[in-house]
Length: 487
Image (cartoon, rainbow, N blue to C red; front, side, top):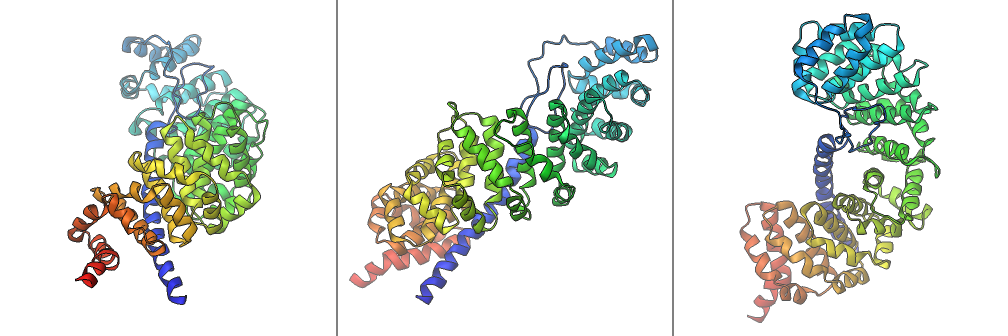
């Protein structure tokens, strides 16, 4: 019995090591995609526009502004009576993208004039100037950094003003700067952005709250040190106060993104759980799983990602969450029916993390989730890998009835194509799964019937030494041994 337990622990460590590597790569890839596709920067086209993550208000009907008009507007900033009109035209022009931004930045004295008006005591001028800054900083790094160095001190100060419009606009522009680079985030932190930005979460103005959360999420996209700084500044209390059943969905979405970034560190899972953040987010997941439309990917994505990140920590967190929220697993399973591929991926990421716990695995087997997981083994790479890790976690617990349930749902057959992959990670997880299943059940016949033997034998000559060693071990123990005996 002792030897069996040691053997089991060895394989648990193997799949855990694979899982950790996959998590690191997955987080890095997801982070890169979010930076490019979702929320790094936002252009502002009109006063009514306050886009949430993934929305840059691209459907603006603003007419294009010519460079000649831009030049005139820059000159008109000198004239007191023309300033507001000039700034409004520049806002429209700068929203057109890098060509106009580069032209503005290269125009002699243009940035100095903008900063001069930003430092004016006229709140209306300040708002219009910050709007221009927001659109410049939605562009490329060089322009963003140059503008940030000149304007950040003023905008950080204005976060504490009593003008909600000015506060909202500053939070937007500062959010763009924070989404640009680590260098820009360091600059903002050096100017003391964190306390006033967190304080803005308590604003009575919803626009201020949303844009503050946007800026905070971009700050949290930085290093672990920055996430620790935000947590140390008391951000959780302010964020969690905004999560309620009756809270506006846009605000819940923004808050969820901040929490998802805070949870991307491997050091904060227990703190986030004990703060009540997990309970609040599970409640949000349950609330929105009851909606007629389960395909609200805007909100589901950050909530699922947050929970998946937290449950990638100590196994006890998964067990506690399932005990405290008896409907958690059935709620999560609903999102596997989403029309959005990335929602399915986030759902499987969450399931693959909570399935590392024995009691949670037991619940998964008791539900109808195994069939759904097996189905996703034929999906795209990122999705099938998450499903595979979840099934691996179930297998390595060495429970015969669990293995039989997977065999009945054709999991062995579904894993066989993994062996033909050119991806080493995919082969590793399949070999780990088969080794665990062969030890529990005499299912080598099902494996051979699915064409497994012809797929695994070439791996004896694989360039990866670990794959080669595991393959040889499996073949000797479960296949060639019988041939040798009969011979």
